[in-house]
Length: 186
Image (cartoon, rainbow, N blue to C red; front, side, top):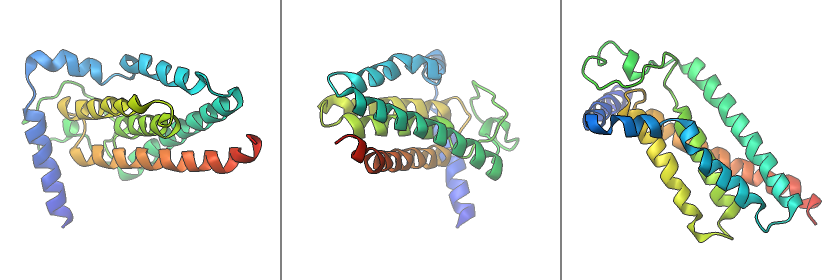
């Protein structure tokens, strides 16, 4: 079963990575950088404070930041513990794929997927009552995560697990924020 799953992961990665077109390489190289998305982060923080009580906004921002730090720690711990090589470092396939970036750390699970999906999900959970369009922030983690396959640095399962981890952390921290801050906001 595990062998079949790994084979599917490898074959799917090779197929998706092979769809890359050279003229789009620069686009995906920009999409994959966190700095590219700084205006989105600024917008989210702005919306956390826009026409909302300052105390509530500060608590929400605190839990947002705690979540980001915790997700980062989880990513680092799991990557070191699992030790799965990235596709670009895997000798059996790195000659068959398009490699645009060559990080040397481990692959499982995707930090880009986990962090971006946690941030987007938390933004939705905190702001969906005020802004119906907030669901559009999901475009960011989808593009951000796919860029990792395009660049040759993550398998699809790395992305899917990272996505699920990020979403779970967002729900956990939203739950904790409600449980902990509710008495202080009355």
